[in-house]
Length: 198
Image (tube, rainbow, N blue to C red):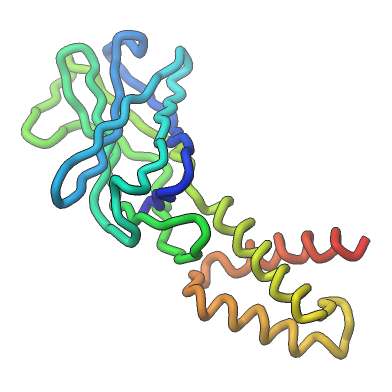
């Protein structure tokens, strides 16, 4: 699932490989579907197949906590592909609601909806989709760090250890952070706390 932060502008990035067609002559768009309308965002493809799709602030266009489908459409010569599709959820950056992150790093399309692809037609491969996991990890670590500092606790003091662990557990539970992110958040948090004390 991809997270769209309504109050931030950011780029969706991935790598695109097309066989049997020119990258230069190909077009790529991101389609964000909602109940009442669809949003089409135009992207660019460089000579190495790196895709950049600017996602502008959508606050006021989409509501918060909306879930839906989004996909990439590629037009390579006379062939239309949808090589990547996922669900999305909308949120604002001042809130923390962790959603599952799409773990797929690569999808290859040989047939798209309603279009038969033969060997003479181009084939599209999409990979290296940048997701929000790194951003989420850093954001969670910073917020936990603030909670610890606010409580005048020191992670390296033996007498504070129990209170620090409780503060971290409460944060992770209240914000519904996925178990798979715990270790990465703790590594980032340890770095932050070490920097604060140095």
